[in-house]
Structure formats: C-alpha cells, structure tokens
Image 1: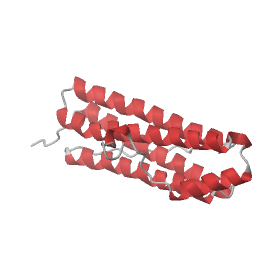
Image 2: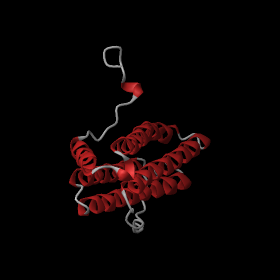
Image 3: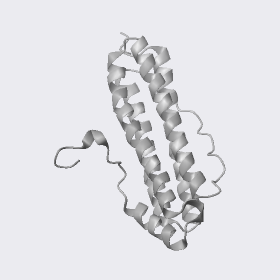
Image 4: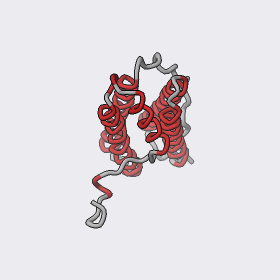
Length: 183
C-alpha cells in the first residue's frame, strides 16, 4: 500500500527548499568565519548562530517530507560566494538572501494551494511567519550599521555594534507580538 501523502512535484519542491536552507546555512557560516577573521567576534557569533537556525529549517523540511511518506533528496551544497568586502556588503547580502528565500517559500505556498495540499500549505505557514522575522532581523542589521556610521564608522562604533550583536537575541521583535502592555 502506498502511504505517500505528497505529490512527486511537491516532494521535489520541498526537497529543493531543504537544500536551499542548507545553502543559506553554509553562506551564514562563511560570513561568520569572515567576520571572526576580521576581529568581529560578536558579529561572527551572531552569523554562526543564524547558520545553525538555517540548518534547523532544513531539518524541518526533511522531517516533514518523511512524515508525509516521502524521501528527501540531498544535493551537493554549492560553495558560498566570495567573502564580502565590508560589513555593509555582508549585511546587505544577508537581507538579499532572506528576501530570495521568502520568494521561494511563497512559491511553495502557491504550489500547495494549487494542489489543494492543505497539510503542506499549513506546514508552510510557519515559514511564512519565520521569513517576516528573518527579513526584519536583516533590516535591523542594516539599520544598526547605518547608525554606527556605515563603512565610515569609527572603531568605537564598530566595537559597540560587535558587542551588541554578540548578545543580541536570534529573533526579531515583531509587531504581531505586541500587546497593550508591551507595544
């Protein structure tokens, strides 16, 4: 008896996204190594923690595919692009990666809707909300660097930014979490 509850095209699309998440993880890991090498241990730590989060996302896709009777396909992870030239390029790249990933998630949601695969559509809603958080976090990185002075930031400002990101939470505060007590 066939117990698979995913179409072949959905299984392939979810596997592809699993591999995208692994690529994102490798990219953030490479950025973290780059930042550490420049002496930005706090920024490096922040990016490496984000790398782990992206890997966890890949595992969520893997487990979901298997839970629905499918078999995830693991592909070779492409090497991340060259190191950024500066923090501005690094943080802008983080934002671009997140926006690109959001668009991929939206395409999966559309496919689930077209196929009337409501279980997968429901599963993907977690990722839709997660991408709001991811993009917000990336925008906050860009904003913090701008406030510090951007590429012309003083050593003191960059030191403070580095220390701030070392202890920064991995989740962004979002408007959806606001209450009348905590706006």
